[in-house]
Picture (tube, rainbow, N blue to C red):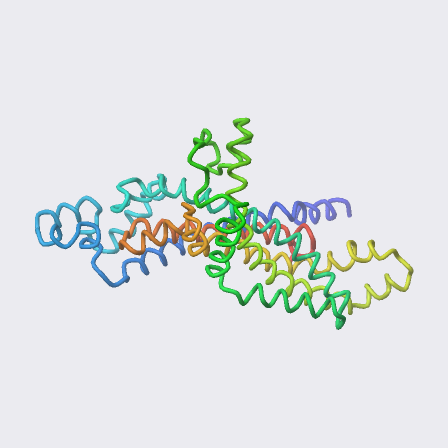
Length: 352
């Protein structure tokens, strides 16, 4: 019997490691699929990227056009271009942007951390506020508090982010003068040495407290705008998830046993509602990273949204493909993290 038990233990041992390997391999296959989709859709975009990059006058010169196409490899068949693109990706080469004349990877190394800086701040605040308000609304179901929170969350979802950004910028900057202008730093400060690309973090690492405070002040308005929108989404979703758990028999049994309300909330209600909440948090974070173009435009924030807008406006195909690849990886990475958190919250997931 002992060898049989040992064999069975060997087959079922380390389920989390197996689950992790499976999810990583699946994500890698999906990344390849993302490259195929972004490459195909980008090359189906109407318009002539050569004319957009060179200008109408230069695009009329066949020699200049031929040189441009040869330089960027667009004179080859699409199949050859795709496999060349994949080969370059393996070496970390995303191509050269005809708009900025820089490697796309270098452009993204500036744009992605800038967007991460506002997205991380917004999602952290949104999760804290949204979970608290959603849980409160569920516990006060049908009462004044519940109705007020539902109306407020609906307003947060309904108000366009660009309009909210303009209003807050006008109120806090032009009228009240309590928020700085656009950009990531005031003109009197130099950017700290680049380590992560996020100004606040790099300033802390360099011990430049004045730069950190100024960068944090510049983060205030864009983070506030994104937080107000995301809080509305999370509040409504958390309320629904908590209401479902409150009607479960094991929660009623916990209450009947006389357990303290705090224990019931943390150990039973929020734990039971955590999986659907994690799902919406992951989707919200991916949306923040990929959909901040209007907010970044209002606050002149040099992030991924602004870079994507400029690349699309100039038919910058390497830039567009680079942005599409990064957004795809962001969503896949976020889903991978959420799936791993699933397995921590509910061990049955890793055994499925």
